[in-house]
Length: 375
Image (cartoon, rainbow, N blue to C red; front, side, top):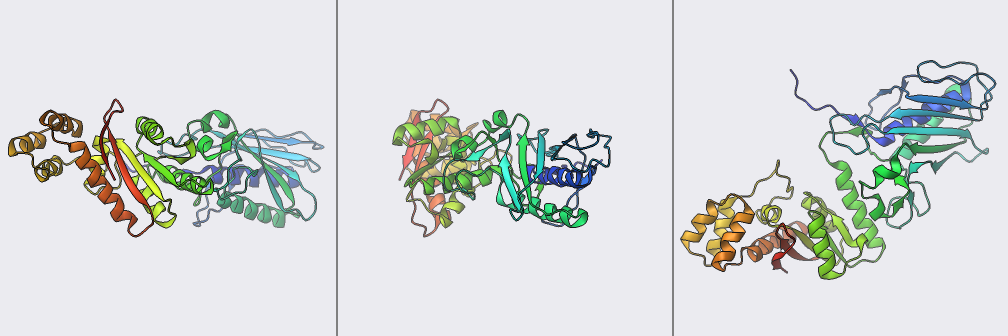
């Protein structure tokens, strides 16, 4: 039996499918169900419609599973698709994504608006101007291309108003970076390929990049990459950093460092627990427990390098966790937290290369107590 993980579709792909179906119905009175689209990589997935509605038509509006043809003269058409993220733990999996399409003024092309559950950009630094609906550039391109195809096939002008909405999107957005990035009122419509690769964490990494963009646009000279909420609180308290200078790095230290190498901010603080930062000190850039492990031998080597005796090094080598090793060293008066911080700082500096970014590191324990610093 196959154990491969099932891929899914981005919100951008779902919005494109819903838009193609709605515009087809606006021109012909018929909703194609399923509706097939073309993704940037050349795939041609088909999407079943979860809901459909024609407004102002001369006939009877169709419903999912049974459309009624001949409703030419409709003033708007709405089609909905349920997002399937495959086996990825995506916050938007199962969300109902809808597109309402109306005729636009001649020569206006495709004009996008944010319906309920889709956010609006309120801060500079994102790939969209302030005031625009949070529908990212690639999904916009996909929708424009499919509107043009439908118009060519059915004799339309291609001048349309497209309103994208996500049922419950405002609540779902609270589980994302959107509020911090200044995207208010709902979710973003995302995706560069149209495909969700399970556990690729591409959305998280993209959010890290957008967070850096927003911080730079706001003129921040100091940002903090934090592994979790406790380290974020500590960094904010230590340095008085505003929310848009705090990067929810999670396990993706490499994503922060590589993006800052190309888009520098003068100062970076890395803050996190001793376990994760021990892995960074050991050269790992992905700090997830399934993809990197704390190496007790490395920690024992740090003990020896700091003048610790062989008995302590042996005890650290046998420690259950990095936190256990830290406690052993604290009892012996050896600053393992500082040594881990300095090792993590060296790894970070190596990734940043010659970028004009100074790095300091703050190591905490589970209670949020600072147990090590460097830089």
